[in-house]
Image 1: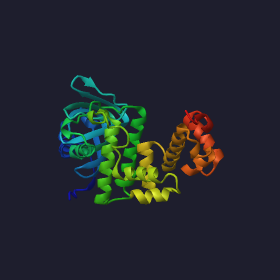
Image 2: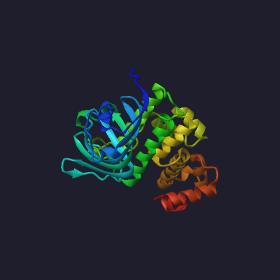
Image 3: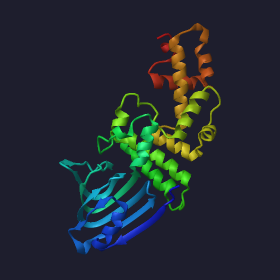
Image 4: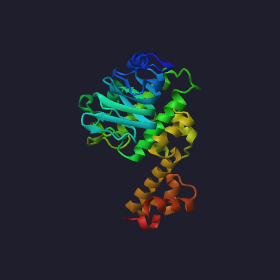
Length: 314
């Protein structure tokens, strides 16, 4: 078991003192301060060699080179100014940035940034579990696929800082860290463009963490019965709060909203089949788990843009 968890904070006004500390966290780094008299760095990090979250604050103007060979590094600018150039490409720093695994030239001016680093092997392990070849995996872009996915990345980082690597949880267990690594790796694959998720057959929820997959399966298999947030959490292994957070980050909905969608899909499929033996619309709705028929009709119309009666026999 790798148990090298640490939480530390480093501050200095000396660029020469800062460099070896930064070099311990990043594969290769160089630093040059334009205004040595104003230089200051405040670097706080929590995690281990496989997953860590950090915040860095640079005062004054500085520039340097960074290379991450064995880890993926995602930065999110919080305040100040920044430039990031890799090869001939200038990266959009207004969004979360997945640093390429090549030497990047970075410029700062009164910078405040949130950073997540995850071991490449953790992502490759998930790619393998998804049935893809990790040797053929590559990220093809450095910014999120969409603003909505960028927001999901920000929510994931907030979760890590608030629930896993927080002052209120000073010694996260190996299990907590393992779950965080899997959830972060799946979010990374979903948010940033890459060859694995672009491959045929990689849609749906196959990328989801194991606990979330158990929750989805439990809902789908028991949708016509009595399903509560507590029962979903118990079946999946999440706490109630963890379940709600996971659904919001990965599905952009609550567990009960997903349950409602599953039930509506079941009614819609039955009505489209149009068999008289299936019973009345009210009977079909009750069989799918709906108890309030008036509310069911409103939800059906919102979901499919037609009434249940209009969908019958389509």
